[in-house]
Image (cartoon, rainbow, N blue to C red; front, side):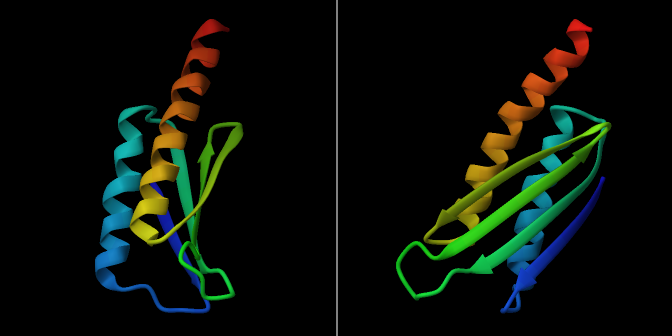
Length: 99
């Protein structure tokens, strides 16, 4: 799976990028047909407490799965997105098996 990280209007640290790589790559254990993952990180204006937005789009054979969360930290937002995508992947896999 190819993981692309895009940071909008700021530079993500290497620690954050490796955290994202580790978390997103774990999604492959739920479905091995993931082609690519696109992660977009944004700092939402104005400067409030929960102003870190993370979006993850998974490109899966024939369909895209998407999750977006806004939290105090990018790590929290990524964790929330990964949990949401795990559920989506399980549903997607069940739908394929039913056919």
